[in-house]
Every structure is written in structure tokens, then in C-alpha cells.
Image (cartoon, rainbow, N blue to C red; front, side):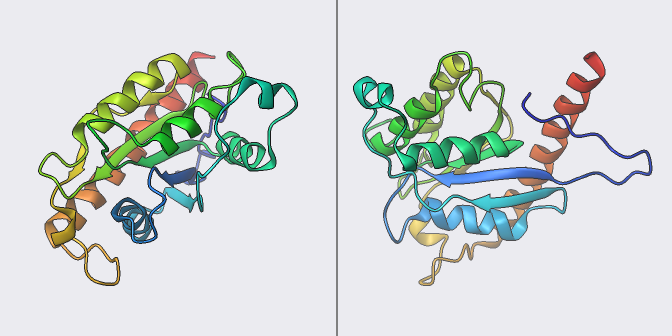
Length: 203
């Protein structure tokens, strides 16, 4: 892993640096709102930063050969600086949005030394449909097979009928969903910390 954090022997641990980003560019995105709720509900062990936008130039090897555009370089640097990732994706046509796939394509380069290589991730999602982005999350996990990005398998955050779960101000107002998201983030913290500490011991 890019970062291996250990306790100081007193029971205190440095919070894990979480980079969170949404696969939607819509101003009123439910997935962006879901990330804001996650930031609000995260346990003390997760220090979360929400990346403003993954609207990047379309991936093109000719462009890459001339050097990463500044938006791409900034996005890659943010991933490298993070310990773990939290990604919220909507579902478009049974899959992830093109803007998210494009961001993953950029962050998968250069092969073998990419920012996504060895990162730990959590995937969540909200949708107005009844499956809550389940198929999009599965597609993202498939992409992560190539990037060597380990995503937590269970539990899953699949916020269905999102228009009923958020208020007019974009706040997650459904209490059962808030409670589940809080527990999910606690599980993610323990899962990521355990893997990092296990890898540190293995060294």
C-alpha cells in the first residue's frame, strides 16, 4: 500500500486520509450529497476530503504522451496523497457514468505505477431506481481488478429511491439510511486499518 499507518503504542492512531469523489457532475447530484453525508457521519478515524469534480479531459494517449493536463495531475496527486478512497457512483444504462470511467482510466496510468495501484477503496451509490446503483458498483469493481485496487465487498451501500431519502437542501434525511451509512463507515475504517496493519506486519 502507498501508506501504512501504525499506532504509536498508546492506542492513539493517526486518522486515515480519505479521498472521496462522486461519479456525477450534476449540481444536485444525490451521490455528491451522499458523500457530504458520509463526511458528516464518518468516525474520528477517517479524515475525509471531498474532491470537487472529476470532470477531466477525455483520456487520450497522445495527450498523455505530452504530459498530464493540470486537472489530471491534480487528481492523481490527490489519490496518491490519500490512504483510502470513497467513491459514490450513480448508475447510467446498467453501468458507471462515462466521466467516472474516464477518471479511472487516467488514474490507471502509468501501468504498474498508477495512483490507483494498491489503494483501498469503498464504493457506495445512490439512484432513483430500485437497485441503488448495484450494477454500476459491480462494473467499477471489475475495472479495479486491472488497477489492483482493493474494494471492500460487504456491506454494500445501495441507496434506492434516492429522491425520497434526501431533502430539498440535499441533506440525507432518511434516518435508517443515515444509521446504516454510519455503521458502514465504521466497518470500512476497521477493514482498511486491519489490512494496512497486516501489510505492515508482513513487511
